[in-house]
Amino acid sequence: MSLSLATGTVLAAEGGAGCDHGTPHLFGDNGGFSCVSPSSADFDFSNRPAFHILGYGVTKPTLIVVLIIVLMVGFFWAAFNKPKMVPRGVQNVGEVAYLFVRDRIARDSIGKEGDRYVPFLFSLFFFVWLMNIMSFVPGVQFPVSSVYAFPLALALMVWLTYMYAGFKRHGLGYFRVLGVPSGVPLGILVILTPIELLSNIFIRPFTLGIRLFANMFAGHLLLATFSAGAWYMFSVKGIVFSGASFTMAIVMTGFELFIQALQAYIFVMLTASYLQGALEEAH
Amino acid sequence: MAANTAVVLAGEFNPVVPKGDELVIGTIAFLIIFVIFWKKLLPSIKKTLDERTYAIEGGMKRAEEAQAAAAALQEEYQRNLTEARHEAAKITQHAREQGAEIVAQMRGEGQEQRDNLVAGGRAQLDADAAATRAALKGDLGTLAIQLASKIVGESLEDEARQRGTVDRFLAELEAKADAEAGTASGATAKAGA
Image (cartoon, rainbow over all chains, first blue to last red; front, top):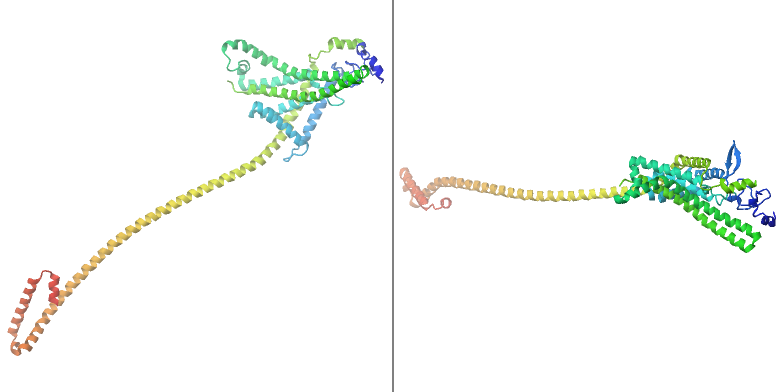
């Protein structure tokens, strides 16, 4: 396709030309699978079904989640299914991952009791990280965690887990753990307790989900904007602007790589700390 | 198409409103992963890691245990040795005491035996002296008469006179002896001589 055509159709998205003539646009209507621009298609949050199975519209995030399951289970199956006393190859990597979650997250936050929650934290960490990292996988280039439903689903599961653990440990006394911080004078408790209860019971799952979602959404937006900018400005403004935008896209890619791992870590660290709060002895 | 896109931009697409079906898909996807890791993969690697830890730490622990056992053994040996030394010292001491006692006892016995022997010897000597004195008493008379006869001749041959003289002489002798007897043994010895 010619660059002049692209120039003429930058605003065509609003005109509704779609992808019909290879028109680059920011919000495609084809599920984000076949648009011409290297970035605009990946910037598609419209969530149209890509195709239908038995009448259900399969969207791109759904497909990516299935891919994540396959990748994650496949990798760790290779690493952990037949473990050797003396580790070889991929088992080494898997063990580092396992020990990281067990020692640095579960045991550091929860203590010895945290061992019971290692499978939960491990699944959570790598699921979130893979969702984030999908932002960079060629041909996928879409972080599933930037679709709020997925972080929210995980956050709700975290909420169920720590609520269950807390009520199992303390019975109804868990309300006290949630609502009455230790060492606070009674007068202040009158104000503080309702806030604490509201915060710990109702707001927590949403902040946990939104933190991840917003980071990934913003990061992806940023990348897509710089990429799209590089693409458009190559024809409109020339190589300098386009190059600057492209450089920023590369720099932000590196930054995002860091943020993706960090957000996955934060998500799991917070989960562990909520669990620790649920399991601690009443004071 | 145009209307479609416009709708997407205007209202249908809202990033902070989660879609129900995606919530379900996310939950199911996570649960699939969680169950596989929880039931299958993590127990497997945990077992291997525990085994490895046991193999390494177990070796060290076993060595430590062996060392502790050796130390305990040595201590017991040392204790036994000390005890044995004590025992030996005690026995030596006891033996020494017993030896001293035995020596003292023996000395006592020896003393007694010597006293007995001395006493026996003395009694024997006394008896011998008395017997000798008696024997000599008889012989002395005869010898004196013979000597006197030789000197004086045959005049004293008369039995009666002879007897009278001898008896008188002997009585004199005895009287003299009795008078002299400060120490019986001295007198006896003199009488013997």
